[in-house]
Length: 184
Image 1 (cartoon, rainbow, N blue to C red):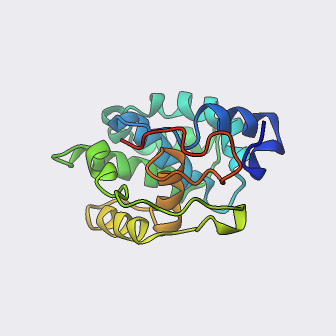
Image 2 (image 1 turned 90 degrees about the vertical axis):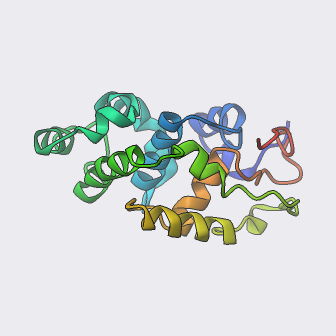
């Protein structure tokens, strides 16, 4: 079975590719988790985040937005001492700040993020080299998120979020998952 080239370098990647990446994901808490993990991944390998994801989920109360929004200085210090996660103060405080910003969204995080999913047909990437790092939609998403108080959500992170959550389908043409998910 053919897959995207990045999916075959580790068992965790294989499972993530086959079971999650590119499948439409909805729900405020679920998308908050993915947004947070994409931010934590910035500057690191995604495999690092995948391997630490269970610890992240525990440390961040299952990424339940109302709970994380209540995190205070003691929680930040607890997280900074947790060797199971990526201990970067800027990223930890960004997750808390983003939870607070998410609570302020009248339409909810899921509706806001999905409003940036492209609706026009897109060319299927033939190779990994054809997969973009950003798009007009991810630039717009990042700008709107920043306008609403979110941090660590630049165009590249936003595009990675769009790929991971099925807002765009960037499985290469030869991958068995290409075109397998309805984005809505």
